[in-house]
Length: 141
Image (cartoon, rainbow, N blue to C red; front, side, top):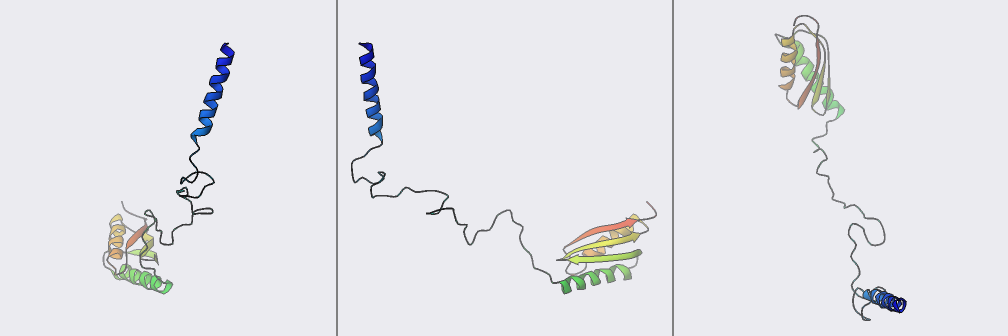
């Protein structure tokens, strides 16, 4: 007797569960029936999502004016001239490189104060955005 009750209860439960997903014919959203299509987030219809044409990452660096090699050479020459003609800074074998407003100074100086002064002189040249000071102090402290 208990066995029959369990079989009937299982059958009723299976029938109820099977009919849960069914709707009356013609209702929107029923599988296989016309109606409102299911909306998919993150994917374009028919495949992978296509990136937006106007997308710009918020973490991407802001691009500044792009310098040409001639402009970089001119800037490095201006900085080298400012360093070699200035009083108070004696730089030996100075090498100045510039790339898009970033100036790198290589060479040797006699005193730590000269290294700092050279960086300030380079920063004051028009067109310099930042200075990488690789000057080495060979005497003094």
